[in-house]
Amino acid sequence: MTMIPRLGLSTSSAGPEPSAASLALMAGLAHKGLRVQHFRTLACPLATEVVGQATGLPGRHLDSWLMPDPFCRSVFARGAAGCDLAVVEGSLEASEGMRAPMACDSQGPLSPIAEALDLPIVAVISCRDMGAESFHLPCLPEGAEAILLDEVEHPSQAPGLKRLARLATGLPVIGAVERLPEIRSVLAELTRERFLPQDLIDRLARSFLSHVDLAVISELSRRRPMPETFDPSPVERGARRSGCRVAYASDEVFGRYFPDTIDALEGLGAELVEFSPLRDEALPAGVDLVMIGCGFPDQRLDELASNVSLMTALRAHVCGGRRIYSEGGGTAYLGRTMIVGGRSVPGAGILPFHSEFIPNHGPPVPVVRTLLSDCWLGPRGTTVRGYRSPRWRLHPSTEGLDCPACHGVLSAEGDWFFHHHAVGSLLHLYLPALPEVASAFAGPHSPSLRRPLSTRLGKRGPGSSGGKN
Image (cartoon, rainbow, N blue to C red; front, side, top):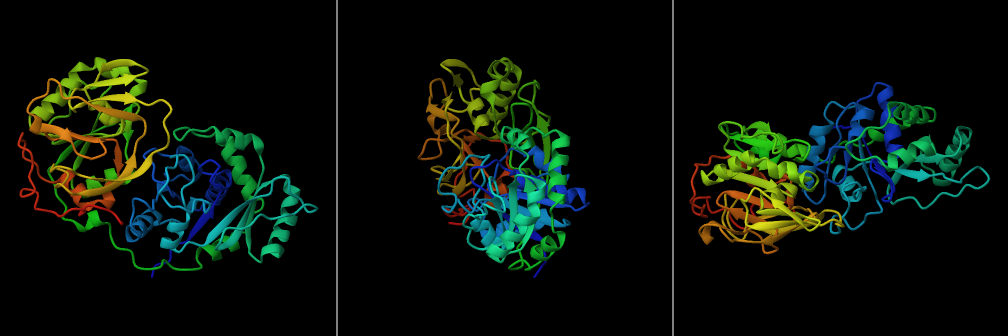
């Protein structure tokens, strides 16, 4: 068994992610010279910049819906390698796992991740309006092994509150964070791509360090080794291939990919190059596969539509028998038109639908999809898990397209389409947990307008690319 210093931080499901208490803990320990790696418990293709600002390390994610337990342990072990402490943040209030939609910015469910990693749980407890004369702890989450006091009104109250919490629960208190309302109000409005003013990060760090018990954190985080030897990633177990050149869209509009997905393709030997649907007039030379991830084409409609040269290059790529893969906003861009607020502008005209933007959309939805037809991703019956973007609605349209056998719908739910070897859906897939699908990305592909058949795909059985059921 391997020892990885780690803590599970149980925070409120209603608060921001990361929470102020988590940010204070990470910034404080980083100020002491420790390498702290943060993991969120809900996958999101958008990086949380303030985490990297506080720790000096980009945040990572785990996800009980996308990742089977052994794979979750593998991802965690790789991400925590070389760190002094791994902090896994989530909510124990979210008891239904990933069956219900959750906003990307919300706290994910901690319980299944904590079980898979055997995390020592630290309960973050709000002390708002609480003092020595009015001390009343709320019910602690089941399995909590320590406490972090949050929203302490005044620094002078912290020692007394820590002592009362220890007496009331019998649990150690790792520290306390002051209320600092002006910082919390800024953090509540902070979007994932923005930073906090550095002086606010420093104030959070000082608040935590004023009340921390480093000995308790060290003992608690090393209380147990990892529950079992973790297997390597299913993608890593596959044969490394080479020669596949992948161009992926990355600019102000597109570029929302799970970081581990890009790493998985590189691990399979793919050569990755960037391009911009906003500015580039041609695709990079010698490209075998084009990827256009999720983004916000609704915010730059006219600029995208005016880049006719790039759209023409994408259509020529498809007509030459080569592959395109898209998700979410990238899929909307590849349709015949994009409709926003009743206004229609031309899309790339590759996939057989009109895409309509939904302004009052909900959070991404965890879904399972099964391929209705053979395609280069896998044979008919291949099952995958992912998150469905609610930002777009796809309206099928086949006018002006060629042979009906060369285009159509790939999912019964109508959110996955193909045209020749262009495949686009509203789903965000986590490729490292789908080894056969990932291998198809980096695998050999001879340019052709012939559709793949199961016999040429090796007759993989239904569900062969799925995650845990």
